[in-house]
Length: 313
Length: 310
Image 1: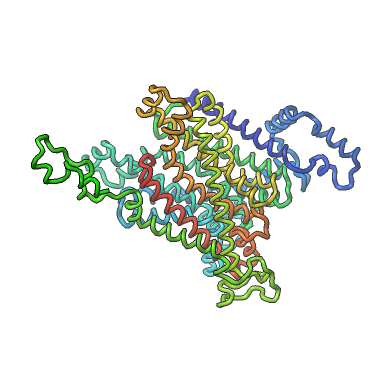
Image 2: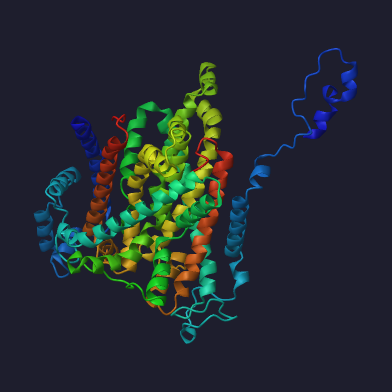
């Protein structure tokens, strides 16, 4: 188990390095001279040259990449052109709202979608199956900001049940925190829920055809127990895979959801950075989210073993 | 189809009486109603509804000038925020532009982006997938780079590219294509790998066909069905990504009335005038729903390899 884990962790290193190289090249090609931007508007040519020297911007490509990677390993993502603050600091400041939004979205989506998929599979072909799968197709088709505004319009503006926008940190109390995250999480999670419900139904249908399910039925096990214990556990590996891969959707959606609901998270940071053409911040955020994505999928790979001890890598 | 079959001597009852040899049943018995792909798929409600919607939306985009007398870009300060009326079907926005015209003309941009990305990503992804699946020496390198590209969440990759290139319709197409290529390439590679093991490909190899002929004549045609299905999903996903990019200000230039831009415009006043966001949102959702419906039924009918039930 330890060797398996270590090997799997080592396998992510080349992927992360390739991601880092790709994003570095993007910034390297970015228009504008970073030395000029950092030196400021009134800097003379000599001052710009000095900044360039100081930051090593006149070094060859590979040396710069090596320096930058070394900085990355120390957690140094460079300095924002706009606010002159370290990018790492900007990201850390905004970590809580984004992680709160992601966590509530994950919990709400998974707890809603898996039973939906199981019921649809158990009643395959019935009206309830069609209704659930129809909702799923709809979930795929409505863009996240449309869902955001629609839910917000119904529950915040018309019914006045929940806050229209904003964020309360967890330190302000659990309910205040959660209240502000309900609509954003459901809106953000709609595509994700559709995805999980569909894959749950598919893999459940496969499992329900197996002999051991018939055996369990013959033994007189209750339907619920067969579905949720025997079948779901064996369908879990493909569901987990999709849960991991779907996080990419959540990350992309978080950028939108945070700006719709004015949540001061990393997504907002991204949008602000785009509007200000703040390349180091864009680079840092993309890199950060990519690493989070790779790590989540690493965790998913490791979790396979919990459900299927036969899996080796 | 039935004509020539029934005229052949073996199928004719009269010939049976006189022929000494045992009668073989006709290869294509004419009483069985045979439905081609279009016959079967035409009976699929989801497909019909999807195609119907697409025809309406594409028709609206093509004949936009006939549907509305208004110019989608014309600013008229005196006609700001007009309510729904017969002249302005969905009212006007805060700059006095006609919302109906903007949504109808917006279909042109969104569809153009979706179809271009689907076409380009399918073409490039097909090429990469064929090479990767057939030339084993390159497979590792190509697939690891595709993996790296796929470990950057799609929208963020597109955002980074857009920040680099600057906003224009063609840059949006390039950025989203780059995001979608690895997904197509992986699919094609998978299909090629399974085709390589098939007997007919082995037969083609042993009978001395050149690699290029095997790829073009034996492998390529068999990748078409899954590729078309995938292209429809790429089209839907590209339209969604375009709207998100435009919505957060990293998409097509703000002056271009794409659905994403129209919604971005509507944000400022959406609490008073929700229609500014909901009208383009419904248009976009219906288009994507239609493409997804068509894609799903194409998958069910064209491609038994992909799971029917998903």
